[in-house]
Image (cartoon, rainbow, N blue to C red; front, top):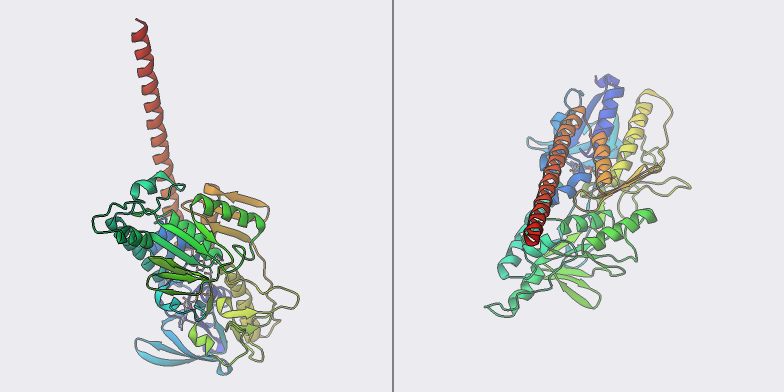
Length: 456
Ligand SMILES: Cc1cc2nc3c(=O)[nH]c(=O)nc-3n(C[C@H](O)[C@H](O)[C@H](O)COP(=O)(O)OP(=O)(O)OC[C@H]3O[C@@H](n4cnc5c(N)ncnc54)[C@H](O)[C@@H]3O)c2cc1C
């Protein structure tokens, strides 16, 4: 096997897994090794739906052993602690100790992590929204804050939540036995501040507003720029503004966050009390990539050209969120799963070209679908000329995610699960409609009887 070529892929996310799987399909004779820190491949675009309980953790995190089963790829569970691009090698820390892995071709796809831009208190007090663990922690935190606010007797109780988006009780319950401090504290606890109105900030804001909590959260979305969703079409932005308004999310544009403390965040000229601060306003490559002495962009990502190869390092590639691909005359692609998967295809081709001799391909960014989740079961989905929103958007988004699952096994399992959930929901709705119609008929019949009795 080793004679056919050894390929080392670092990172078990979109870039790494899709590169390794593609190589395994196209060249089963290769000795392929994938190094992953976590035992699961996390389908990050579904993380938001965890907040509202629209997906379960096992639908988002797919065991890598299952994803790679039958592919011939060797999976090493461990942390990459050093990368030696010139030697096409990496040092990996596993449960059994450290080992040095060397290969004929190397693909670096280690992704990114939150960057708090040295804002005072932000790393210590804000919650991150980047990993599965972050979202599970966030949900528990929001539930806890909400329960505490309820115990303090805020006026924005469950009844206000059920009444719908337009109703946000403002610090009611002033007749508190233990003094005037308690409603203010309850208000602080239910306040959720989200820093950054890119796709993550907007989507989290809509999902948090749609969560079923003991007390309706009061969501504030803060953005330094004058607009939401940079890089998105005007039409999608318009939909996002409408959804934010409908969800009762307060929007503060042109307002840079200055820092955070245990009581909330600091904006220019004011302190906003909050029980939850969520950071979505910046990310950087993971530490081991930031420590590399190769050309890197201002935000620390590895600079690559159109072939995704490191300059002057043949057969060493960087893709996905830890790379910045510069192509003359084209804008740098965004940090999305779509880009990582597209780059994986090019990286796999170019690895083979390097190992077997052949022409390297150039990466070109093709923006395909534009999609956002804007509440429970409410998504926008744009693909070529197709424009869907609401429940149709939700269905289309789920279909695309199914198609994007890395293995047939997961695609089939999730299709059955999601399909079943849809059918159950349709039955529930039909049942409710029948009951409502029966109640209406009953009321009409009773009214008619009364009318006749009166006439007699
Ligand atoms: C909440 C959220 C929602 C998103 N929604 C969308 C969306 O709707 N559409 C879209 O296109 N994009 C979305 N993205 C962006 C998308 O998920 C990323 O752009 C994509 O995952 C990048 O792929 P990657 O392979 O570069 O990194 P990742 O998928 O993050 O994979 C990197 C992998 O490397 C591992 N790793 C890191 N450091 C080490 C180390 N030292 N040793 C070993 N392993 C390591 C990580 O654990 C991870 O598994 C979203 C991102 C987030 C956080």
